[in-house]
Length: 128
Image (tube, rainbow, N blue to C red; front, side):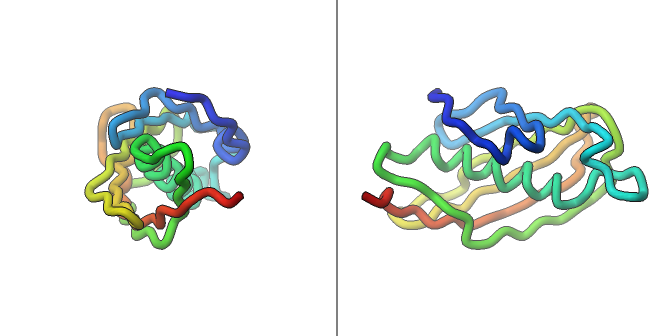
């Protein structure tokens, strides 16, 4: 697995544990910076974790001259996160020449499902 700089993931504190063969597992240790005014992890943080995980899963199947970008994502939130580590497990469901469909599960430290997202990404050639 190559280590590519990811400033946005670094900003939020995501750490990739495993990536390859159409899967990606990452974690986020919740800090006060991730909370909304009610003391719950902001939904956008969970969404970003799922979106970034999907991108990691798909890029593990791409060639060096390909890149991907999000077309759409639908996410369902099942329970709030307030502390500890969040784990995101992402996998490629289907990959064609120009699109990929992925799924991400976001879990808490007790392996309870907090959110599930499904997304479609575009696959294109790198510019230049």
